[in-house]
Length: 210
Length: 262
Image (tube, rainbow over all chains, first blue to last red; front, side, top):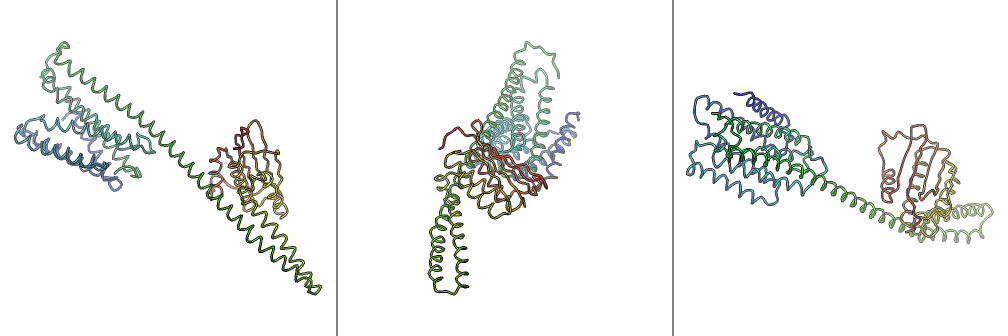
C-alpha cells in the first residue's frame, strides 16, 4: 500500500467523520453523499482484501459504479423541476451497465465501458448543476456553497478518469505509473471536495439546497 | 513495465497534449463560471435593493394617505363637534348665575384651545398642507406649540424658502417629527436645537439635545428609529446619529439639493 493510497484512505475516512459528526444538520442530498462514502470505503476495504488473496477485484468496482449511478441520480435529480430526464439517463445507464457486464464485456474486465459511461454522465451532470447554480444565484459567497465544491470535485475527477481510461491503451505502452498517479491525485482532490462540501452543508441554513 | 521515454512518440504525445488541453479547459471553465456567477449575484443584489426601495416608497405613500384621511376626519368631525359645543355653551351662559357663567367661560376657553389644537394636529397630519404652506412653516408652528408646553425648549433656526419638492418635504417633515417626538418622550432634555441650512447644493439638517442620550451599541432600534432610517433611504439622505449615555443626542441629515422642486 503506497503512501499516496494511504493518504487517500485517510481523506476518505476524514470525510466520513465530518459527515457523521454533522449528520443531523445535513440536507437530504448530502446525507445521500455521506452514505455513498460508506459504500466507497467498504469497496476499498473489500478490494484490498481481494487483491491480497490474488483475485480479480473488477466485479466489486462494477457494483460500486452501479450504486454510484443510483446515488448520483438522486443527488442531481432532487433539486430539478423536471426530474424525468435524470431518471431516464441514470436509469438507462444502470440498465446498460447490467447489459454490458453480462453480454458486452466480461465482468472481470477493467477498465470497462461502464466506467467510461459513468465518467461521461457525471461530467455532464456536474456541468448541468453548474448551470442550475448560475440561474439561481443566492446571497452567500460561491466558495461557501457546498454544491460548488461537490461539482468541482466531480468535474475534475470524472473528466480525469474519462481521459485516462480513454487513452489507457496508448499510455500503458510507455508507462503505467503516471496515469495511476493522476487517478490517485484526482481521488485525493475529490474526497477533499466531498469533506469540504459536507462541512459547508452542515453550516448552511439549507434555504437554497434541495 | 516502464519503457524509456521517447518524446517523439506520437502515441505518447497525443494523450499528454489532450491532458493539457483538458485541464486548461477545465480551469478556464471554472474561472469563467466564478466570474459570471459573481456578476449575476451583483445584478440580483441590485434588483433586490430596487424592489425594497419601491416597497418602502409605496408603504410611505399609503401611510401618508392614511394620515391625510385622519386629518380630514379630525377637521371635519371632531373640529365641527367642538365648535357646536362652543356655540351651545355660549347660548346657555346668558341664563346662568355669575358663578356658573364663570365656569362656562372657562369651558369656552378650553374649547377654543381644543379647536385650535385639533386644527394644528389636522394641519400637521395632512401632507397636502405641507405642500401648500411649506414644511418649514408647519415645522415652526409645531415647535412653537411644543415650546408653549414648557418641558423642552426648542431653538429652531432655518434658511428661508428651502423648497425640495413635495415627496422630500413630506418625508423630511415626518423624519423631524419623529426625531422631535423621540426627544420629548425619552431624552428628558431641557433644551434642544434644530437647524436647517442650505450650503453648496446640499441641505444640512442638524438636531441636538442635552438629554440623557443612549448607548448606540446596545440599543435595539424601535419602529420610530427604523422609520427614520427607511425614510432617509427613500430620499437618498445621509443620516448620522451620535449619542452616548449621559451626553445627549446629535443627529445630522445631509441631502442633495439641485434646486429642483419636483
